[in-house]
Image 1 (tube, helix red, strand yellow):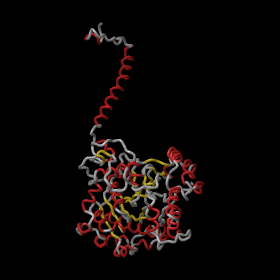
Image 2: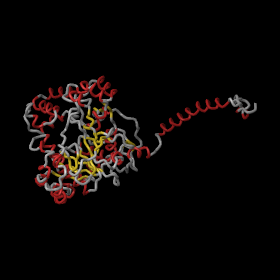
Image 3: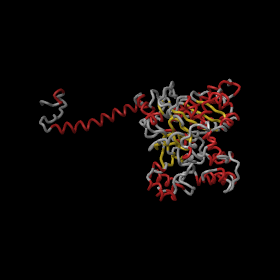
Image 4: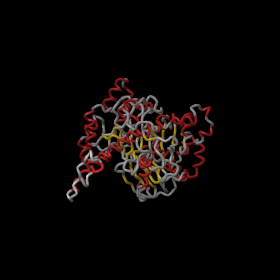
Amino acid sequence: MAGTYGSRHPSLPVPSLPSSPSSSPYRLLYLLTLLPLVLAAFAFSLQWRGGLNDPSAINRITGDESRLPGSSPTHSHSFTSISTLDCSDPLRRSSFPGFPYLPDWKYRILHAHPKICASTSTSAGLDQILPWLFYHQVIGVTNFFLFVEGKAASPNVSAILSNIPGVQLIFRTKELEEQQAKSRIWNETWLSSFFFRPCNYELFVKQSLNMEMAIVMAREAQMDWIIHLDTDELLHPAGAREYSLRRLLADVDESVDTVIFPNYESAIESDDIRDPFTEVSMFKKNYDHVAKETYFGLYKEATRGNPNYFLTYGNGKSAARVQDHLRPNGAHRWNNYMKTPKEIKFEDAAVLHYTYTKFSDLTSRRDRCGCKPTKEDVKRCFMLEFDRAAFIIASTATEEEMRTWYKDRVVWTDKELTLKLIRRGLLTRIYAPMIIIQGLRESNVFSDALAAVGKSPSDTPSASVSLSPQQNNSTLQSRVGQSMDVTGRRLLTLQEELAPPPLSPPSLEDEIFL
């Protein structure tokens, strides 16, 4: 039969497609039926083979010409349950699969633009500092100014930290305190309400003085942006074209001086968290990122009997362009002696605050403060209501009573409520930091940092802890001295903006004013 496919195989005749113009719809229907089947077969073959080896997929996430670390190429890309991970050693190597991993992957971006530095004041150990530090290197931070004391200043820890490229340690010694005692900050009014008060107030002043010095160090290192973070905070650069802080800040208009990262607060689902950065994926969103009607409509359900919507602060953190006359404005903001900075607030990016994520945080916070556990005395020591209540409980209750209080006030055990608040947009799941940090463990970044120096001070040459306060002070003396000069130029003396303390998010009492 002419025009049939069966002409080559007489024994298997195949009906011919109509040759008239009306055959076009049949051909189209035939193609639409066949094409999905071919594509499905192709996708199945790719999955069976393990996928294409396409570095550009990761490049689009990182903005770098290298892959993010993670599991080896032989690992499956399906995720395992976080609850099955052994978190007894936060710096361990685990079998948790993450990003595709190349053995020669370089986690530090050497030729970054813009150049971003992070400043922190910490007494934490390596189990907290190393994941915090390397995570921020992955997303684009190039330099770290660590003002260390306590565990962080111990010989073993400081030797390891100072051996990491881009890290500069400043120890809290008598020389440093004497230098900071000459700061112009003491003769200004914007921080004066925090002076000579214990605990959190003292820490707030210390952080501000350290930030002032970090500005000078950032200028010397030719940084473009500076941000102050605590080691229980991770930046979440959502909204950028890649998961990259560098890309996020590169897209900021040049006329902008400071940018605000609203904070999201951790919402833990277990009272036995050991490694918050890899065990916590649920966060309570900031007021600035949710609908006003939703926020106030579900306020009581979200607070669960606590004093405020967030357990601790709600005013986020900010990054500032490194420029002339820049100064800190408390631990959460920046200002300028010569102008009012132009400031914007990110609509998607946030800073993730892992607060009270471990049960031991109750006692560790208590042990850092010598106040009496009374309602009146804790007001001298703590700025936020939940911190005051937690201090009193940790100082007066038995461990069993503390555990019960912690479960009731901090741990999210009501699954129905959790699901409701996720659906309404007050709670959210964020996995990127968890996956990146697990990927860093898989690539042995943490263990390599430990092995590079060793754990014994006797094995570490004194030069490896080379960034002592004495050397830093002599290096920065002239520039820091100029920055601290009380007689320097002061344009905003009569209109100094008071440093915002850690502030709670809006409450129901504030609704009528918003």
